[in-house]
Image (cartoon, rainbow, N blue to C red; front, side, top):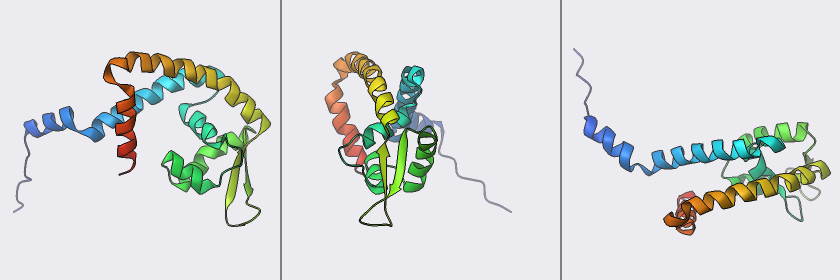
Length: 151
């Protein structure tokens, strides 16, 4: 005879619903992602593509590991995210001259042009969002999110 599974009760469910930092961060992240996807759709980018392209907007093309670390993703996911951008001619990936085991990622001229068109769209949406959050101290929110990102 099998023992009945233990139950934690509905009060535990309500506690998680109301206080779980992970749940609230996931919900906020999904809402922000949808919002910025909608904002960036007219320029032909998703919020993830915009963030990835901004991570490449440097004087020297970064190696994959640097970008993966900045975006808090593994290299396999980064590779998958790069494919459509490479396919559209917005990004190139090439072997590093000094270390052939590493790959450097760079924006193409078309990528830089698209990023230049997308940035003001992002800036206006971001400024409006920060304005809505003014009463909640967006700087403290950013600091808290950065601290969580270092877990």
